[in-house]
Length: 359
Image 1 (cartoon, one colour):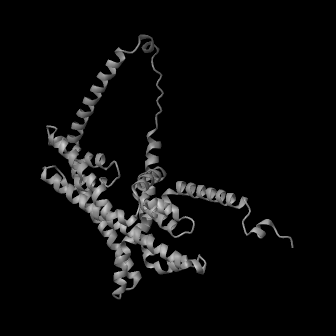
Image 2: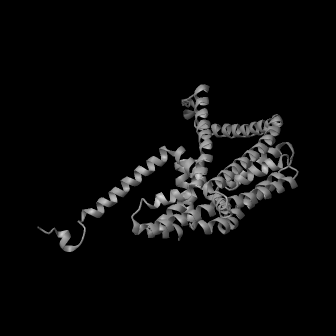
Image 3: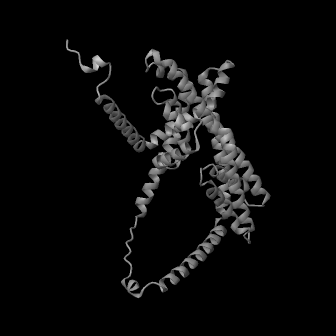
């Protein structure tokens, strides 16, 4: 039998590494295309995974005290749904009360918009006066594209349908993930050779700790922000302090844009109560202070050490997953990237990627 050069030297053919790299690039492209076009399905599964990891410690506590795991999982899912329904109902009643008083707020917003438009019109008039005469004579061609009301409503109805379907599937997915956790883990380990199962088990356990720590840390930080915002708005005598505090506290968690988003609800509510700029300035300063403390003190201390990602990796993850999945990408981008880091740490040859993400 003739011996090939690769057998004699013990090396792979020179084209093999290039072929493997090409295959990896093609596989990565296929995965990204799937994640983009199957965003609604992937988002539903990821949300269910995060909630399952969040509820799993309580289910295990029930199981250790003699309760069957299926019954404990059912109780936790029902409790989760009851808490969400109660929270949404409370906010809904406050929102209805606010909607009844909306005309007075809309009048203030209309007058503010007219003032801004008047100012912009005066600026445009001043600019047109210094524009050369021959350019003004040419005029400007404007192309307007109109959208029918029916197509707009159908588009919004489709988006709402996706949200309702996802919300209906999440409780069932969470229950099955909690109740069949051991069976799912055992079946997952059987997908790998026996020599790799210990490493896979360690990786899955670390991913679970990362996801659980991220969810619990964010819930704790969000609770602090909601309480602090509500107390601040109540001390300022703002109408609907609980409603504004909850919305501002949640929006303040949005990276980089949290200051602007969290300041919008109290600024709108203050239109009918505040005359001078002092209170508006105080709101902006306090929302900035809350956001600054959250990103630089609370988030690194409570969440950052659990996900083990550096600031650059977090920023790139938010940009990429936000582009891929929109607002939901900002929500799950960090845990997804943290899970990728853990997987890279446990795969031979990918350790440098994991070290770069956590450097």
